[in-house]
Length: 119
Image (cartoon, rainbow, N blue to C red; front, side, top):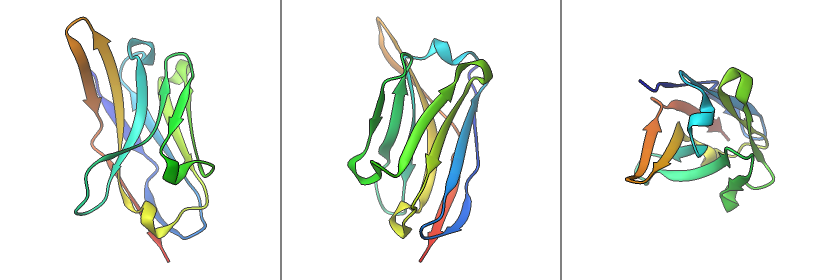
C-alpha cells in the first residue's frame, strides 16, 4: 500500500522560508510524476509544482522563482523549498504521486500539512 507522509509545514512570517518533505513508503520510481498541490480555505486545490521521474519540473506561475521542487530517489522523498513566502501562500499543502497505466491515472495523496504565512 502506498503511503505519502508530509512534514515541514508551520507558521512563518512573510519573506521567510520553509521546506516541505514528502516521504513515500515505496520506491518513487514507481510513479511517473510527483508533486505538491495546495488548497486554501474556500478555494479549489491547485498544482504548485511537480517533477517527473526523469527530473523535469513544472511550476505554477504564482510560485516561479520562489519555490523549488526536488527529489531524492535514494530516500524516496520529494521536497518543496519555499522561499520569499507570501500570505497568499497560506494553505494546506498536499503531496501527490501519479502512476499512469493503460487504464488511466492512479493518483495517491498525503494527508496534508498546513502552511501559514503571517503578514
